[in-house]
Amino acid sequence: MSTAKIATMPKEEVWKQLNAELGAEFDQYVLAHPEILDQIPDEAVLCFQLEGEEAFNRWSRRLVASSGGHPIVYVRISQLRPVQSRIVSVKIALA
Image (cartoon, rainbow, N blue to C red; front, side, top):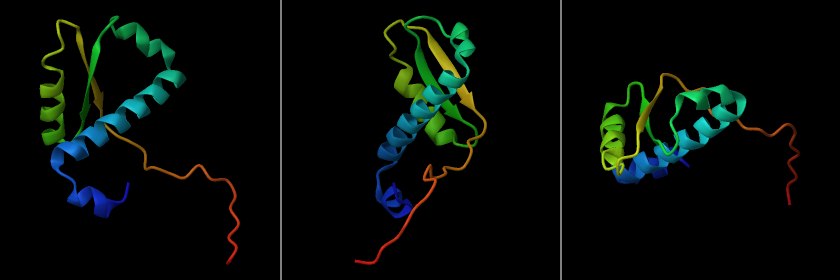
């Protein structure tokens, strides 16, 4: 998503997008480190917390506050690598 588009989105929409991205990143992390699942109870609700993003973190905690009795697990993320393209090779042709 472009930076310009994000700048015009309401905060809650930006946070929803960030939450979805963190969920996808965490899924990838779990695939590489399946032993971490031993720390997460069955039927737990994950609450992503991103270092330096206090407004998002408050929103995320409010989001899971009504977890319906399910255990809440805080996933504290201190750092993300920059997003990089997975393209290995590309050719450009002018039409």
